[in-house]
Each structure stands twice: as structure tokens, then as C-alpha cells.
Image 1 (tube, one colour):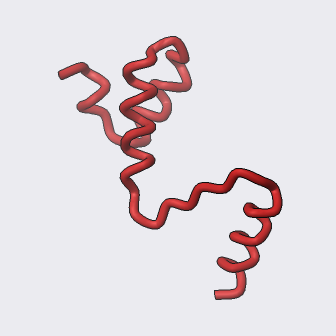
Image 2 (tube, one colour):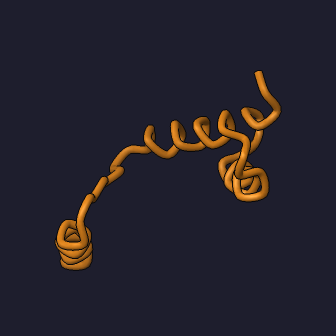
Length: 58
């Protein structure tokens, strides 16, 4: 286990920002982000706009 795996999400985000060459830490952070429920992935500006409108109208 690497030290970054013991960090909170916020601490890990800051670590990744400060150590952009640490690919393992970055991939660990991405795995955490991808595992969150309700995650929405958009590929275009139009998809982003539609998702924002949908969420704002709730």
C-alpha cells in the first residue's frame, strides 16, 4: 500500500495537484472519482448543457 492510499479524498486531490508525475496516485484518484454514485460523463458541450439544464430544473 502506498502512502497516498491512506489520504482523504481532499488530501489526495491536493497531492495529485502537487505531484503531477505520480501516475499511480493519479490513477488511484481517478478510480475513487469513477466509483462515486451518480457520476455523469459528457463528451460534448451539448451534452454538458443538457445535463446542466436537467439538474437545474429539478
